[in-house]
Length: 599
Image (cartoon, helix red, strand yellow):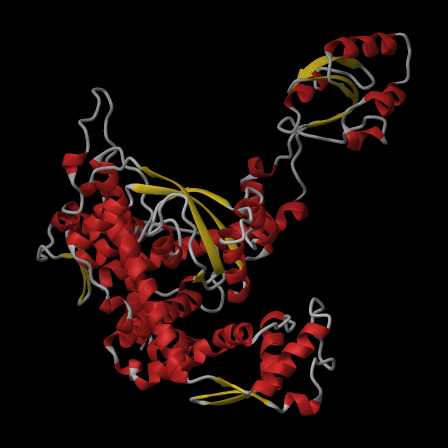
């Protein structure tokens, strides 16, 4: 006990010293061993989070401090994992191998999309001004360009009613119910191709078919109006982020289109004709099953298309479609087949481009790989060291049960028969019949509104006060077979007859044993974590720059606190050692210093 008290006091002293006597430069918010957390790194992390609304500067400071402590905790796990040599642990190889392609594609996106998009203040200002206009429009959405062209002629040259065609033919059934009406929207609300076309139209004008990822749209603008906006400076950062995302999406689509052009996909006309014939004739709504292919063995061997990296047979195409959706949908045109082929080939083409550009040698990939490696190392370290299960014995469980019996007291319960009706007058009439000797169960079966209790003569079964508080309060005053009512309960009226009452009682040990074991395991893990962190803070000499942390809070944006209200204060402290009388499992949690000495 004395040793634990000394350690606790040491931790408190250490916390004060580390927070207030740090000698870090203004751009460093914390230091863990030799690793620094820069102000910009921490600020980026804060900006990625959904922050609560702060009332005072102290609240924001407290929030930032807690987030910094969480980041420090993760850094401590990673540094300790390196000390244990987990970066060279072969057990992590399978998880990292699965990540390689994902990381390569993320790095490709960073190199060819994100780094190529930059915005000027003038572009953001123009984007802001565009958001000040709203359109009201209707549209007709179809899958095929030929159908779209036909419908366009009908509504522009043939005199067909736009709303009627939208209701009957549009794939967008939600707007179709309203004649294609989409309501009012800004340029940012719709996909770029749709918005560009819609905002180029005059009121009453109908567009030629425009293609998006959803299909082909025919758009009719029905109104245009101005929209009230917040001042530009308030919206600038948000709109810049939106515009960056929009530009990245546009650049991504253009990049993908280039990949398909470079792939030089060429279909074999006879194979295309066969796919259309077979998929349209067969019952395409029925999922495919092994042994029942759409195509014969010879048909499956036919080459469907060639491209820069090889060729695909009809059988390979069929197998891929089955893997993706369990069936081959009806193919009505080469264009439709091409759309599915593009979906299938896209991951391969992106991977080939990444390899061609040697993305794995880029700083972006190396950083992502390091980040993923450290995440796996942290997970493995916590699994082996922090979250190692305790050896909870029955004696531990019974001791907890005996010392915390208040946690295992069952609630008082009552069981009643009830007749529930919707008017006080009817309840009084039923009460008179009961007083005259009528059978309660028979009246309940005939009149009660509570459906599940009808067949049981109105019996509700044992229930605690929180389930039916008004009924419980009345029933607890009764003796068995006594009747009370009418009772107003949430707008309905009830008459009850007490069947029995059950006093609060201690639940049997065996009934609660599993929950006790889970609670002890949880307490052990939390204690192990806190004890380990207390040692790790010392070993790695954690230093936090209070001045740099405070610089992230703009106190001028907070109004003066109303008189009489005291702002919450938070005293930063390093983790303190806790005690828990539970034996660890065979893999005990060792202090960070001892772990380092053992490696």
